[in-house]
Amino acid sequence: MKQAVLCGPRRFEIRSEKAPIPGSGEALIRIGLVGICGSDMHLYRDGRIGEIRMDSAFVIGHECMGTVEDVGPGEDSSWVGKRVAIEPALHCGLCEYCCAGHANLCPRVAFLGLPPTSGAMTELMTYPLHLLEPLSDTITDEGAVVLEPLAVALHAIRLVKVQPGQTIVILGTGVLGTCVLSLLSLYRGVETLCVDILPDRLARAEKLGASRTLLARAGDRKRIAGEIMELTRGRGAQVVFECAGSEETLWNMAEVAAAGGHVAVIGTNPEDRIGFASGSARRKGLTFRFVRRSLNTLKPCISLAEKGLISPGELVTHTFKASQVGEAFEMVDRYEDGILKAVIDMTKWS
Ligand SMILES: [Zn+2]
Ligand SMILES: [Zn+2]
Image (cartoon, rainbow, N blue to C red):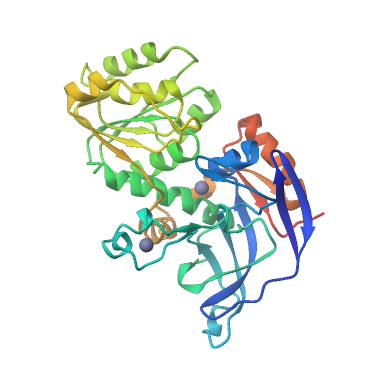
């Protein structure tokens, strides 16, 4: 089988490996599509994300779907042939955090496609059966890949307890911001103000139902904060989603929040350090929730997509062959061609 191996910063190689054999409790999956995530981009550019480093050539990729090709000895063979979504977090299930219902905070968690756990940019992969979710035909392959960031967005929405009728600011309408926006469309009377520096992203946000969009430029966080305060009649937003991780959006997340408001911090800052308007935060008594991956939100997202209440496939703007993996990452890196979610087809190698 073939794999797209990240051999160092900005360098992929296609390599041939022996196909893995599923053990007990496992399935062998033929990977269909794999999405390129912001965290993959950190590994691609710098060979690291936060504390996690790639010490050697490594297979990345965690937003994925595929078809079960085989199961381990003694496992239920009715899985074979099923299209599945894949929960990428492998928590231990035994520690005090897992047992207390906070599996996303498990200190012993392994994560698909983060060193040292080899990821999904491969033709075939073995994976625990209990972390697979069968997909009905109503969910496209593209939609299935977006379920993972969608699950993160739903977890964030739950953490800040969104209510119908609230005014909500989304700072950054990349994939996560757009996932938050499409889930917020399920709440009645919510007013959503979306901020980004890319006009095509704001155009998409408008199509997905954003009430207002604001085009930001580098260095004008004060203007943006002022406009949001004006649009909210001086109150600010009851909930703010920080989905960009940039210095200016992180600073503004407290500035644009209403007194007593909630802020969900989803964006990751590559410098591992954030500055925000702490005086505003204190005066307004804000509640900050830092969002760590997802928690029991994959299944609900599948069910929302199955019912046609959200259309995750709409976020996929570009599909590349596995043989074009380097090209795909470069294009995402340069935000070219209105790219939002790029996916790689792991069945196409020439
Ligand atoms: Zn991701
Ligand atoms: Zn655990």
